Length: 388
Image (cartoon, rainbow, N blue to C red; front, side, top):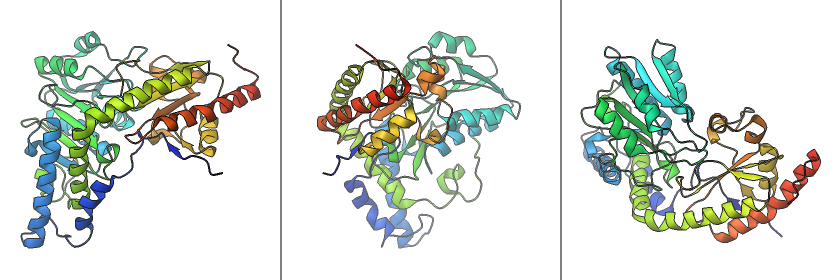
C-alpha cells in the first residue's frame, strides 16, 4: 500500500496556488510585452505590474510608490542593508542586528564589516527574543540601521516588531525587518509598526519562486546595489518578471484575505502536534511557546540525530527539515539553535515541521505514528532509550 505523502516544510517553500497560476498564465503566453515599451503590448504589461504593486502595498499598509520588486527575500535584504550603508556611511558606520537572523542578513552585514562598518549582534533569550533594553543600550550616535527579523524562520519566534520600531523611530535610526516568514501569517502594517524597510518573498505564501519585494518607506535614503536601466525607480534595474509580479500580487491578496481563518486552523493543529511530540518523551520545544508563527513546530529530539530523523521520515512519505533550507547541506548545527543556548548534540537532533493551509489533523496523526518508532529505533542504536 502506498505511503501517505505529508508535506511539513512550508517554511522552506509553499506550493503555487491554482488561482495564482491562472492569474499568471496570460503573462507567460500571449501578454508577453515588456513593461518599459510604449506600445500596446508594453502598456498591458505595465498595467498588470502596477496592479500587483497596489495589491502588495495594500497588504502591508504601504503606498504603491514604496514597493520595489526584487528576485526574492535575499535580494531585498541585501538591497536594504547594503543600500542604507552606502547612502548613510558619511553619517555613521554602525549597524545593529541579532544573532538569529537569516544568512541573507548576517552575510550582508558581515560583508560590511570587512569594509570598515561596525556591527553589534544582539543576543537573544532562550526563546529567541531580542530584549528591547539591549537594543536601546546598543544604539549609538553613529548607528544608521537596525535590522531584526519579524519572525524567525527556524524556531518561529515572533519579535516585538512594533516595540523595536518605536525605539528606532525615537532615536532617528532606520529599522529594517526581514518579514519573509511573517507575510500571510501575522498582521503586518508598516505604518503602525514603524517599519522603514521590509523584505518579503512570494513563494512563502503560495506565490511563485523568483519574485519578492523590498518595501522602502518614502524618504528613506537608499543607494542601489545593482546598475542598469531605470526600472523600479532605478533601485532595481532590469526587465521586470511580469508573470511573477502578477502572481505575487494575487498570492498576497489571497493570503491576507484568508489569514484569520487559515492561521486559526494552523495554530490549533500546531498545538495539537506539539502535544503529540512531547508525549514521545525526551523532546523539547524550541522557540517561544506562544509568541511564535502559527504554523511553526521546532523540537529537539534528544539522543536522535537530525539528519537520520529526516531521512527516515522521508522514507515514510513525510517531508520536514532540520532548520533553514538555505543551510540544509551544512553539518554544523543551526546558529539559531546555538544562540538560544542549545548544546551542540541537542541542536543536531532538531526538527522543523511547518504546516500549511491545507494541512489536516490526519497528516499530523500519521506523522506522529511513523515518528515514534523511528525515534525508538535511533535511540536503540545509540543505546539511549528514554523510559517514562
